[in-house]
Each structure stands twice: as C-alpha cells, then as structure tokens.
Image 1 (cartoon, helix red, strand yellow):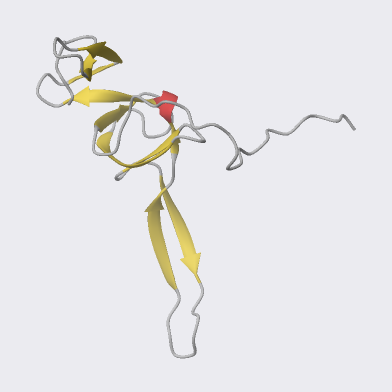
Image 2 (tube, one colour):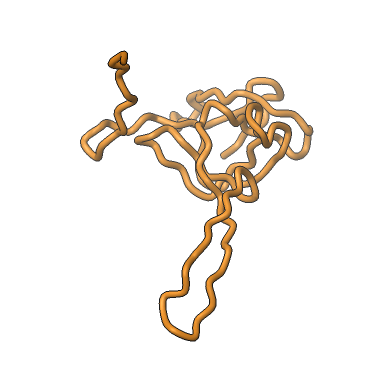
Length: 121
C-alpha cells in the first residue's frame, strides 16, 4: 500500500481568498456536469474558494422521519462549486467573461468585465 497524502480540509485559521465573484452575481458554469448553465450566486465560501449557485449542482438528500407519525422526505439542495469553474455572465451581451478590478477616477475600486468593459458594481 502506498501512503498517498490526502487533501487537507481548510480550517477556520486559514486565510480566506480574495474572490472576484460575489453574492448576487450572475455566473455561467464553464466546467462540470452543469456546463453551460447560468444562475445567481447564493453564497460564497472564501476559505474554500467555492460558490453556491441557484439551481446548479443539485444534490438529493434523504431525510428520515424525526418523530412518529411524520413522513420521511427527499430534499434537493445546491452543493458548492469551485470558483474556478464559473465565470461572471453578462445578461445583456450574452457573454461570460473574466473580471478585472480597476480604480475609478474618484479613487474607488470597481469591477468590470474584461470582454465587454461592462461595470458590475
């Protein structure tokens, strides 16, 4: 048997990564089983560099009844995706693009799409 090192799960002491994707952004999946689908970011997990997108990467979970007389049920919920597998999507131009951060004339940082130059916020 070979001793292969397992991937260490990030703990709370790890430094969160700076993510260019934020909650509420529209993103397009570029890799994986849901490739080509678009959805809204519900949650970002910066420590793990992952995002949860509405309607993408659905998982089914079987829940046992907790009390007598209650029925068990099957719940579908979104699982997280790695942030590198999604790109911000411009609904008006119908194109996915990378994000650049630039400093505006008044000195504030803004995000814009590299392909179209469209401002995100």
